[in-house]
Length: 176
Image (cartoon, rainbow, N blue to C red; front, side):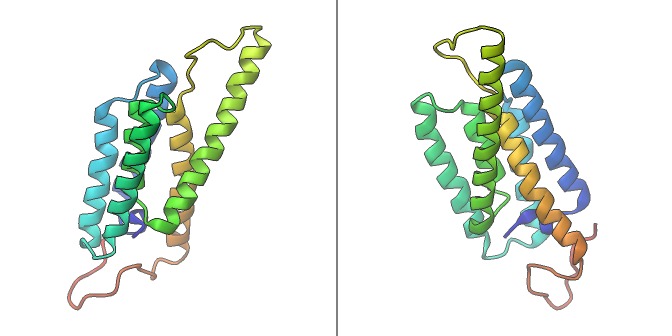
């Protein structure tokens, strides 16, 4: 289940603020705090509660576990930072399988663009690539997430009567 479609607007705003904070933290300090990651994670769990903890949430849990597992391997090989792995996994909890592919593709595309920008700036400054020079990947994670979540939210606003959950007698959809 794509949780942005069932979350109330205020919770989507909290998600956006947490992703912006993560991008800024990573840009300024090359670190993403656990509190910021926790805000994204708890927000996903709250969105699940607003959606009614449906059976299709196993996809979200599997996306989270797979991203965390693969990310841990990437971290052990110094390909990603620990905060990047945690943020990407927590963000992955917000999406199902099909949206996860879009999320990862968007994040990797944004990461490539950011890497090219960093390489260009280093070359323009005449600085050689140093061993261990790092790129704040939290910016790419936030950019990819904004693209995917923005598209999902816009689609939901265009068709507010569509609910990805079947109607349950006597239960109203969450208010926005």
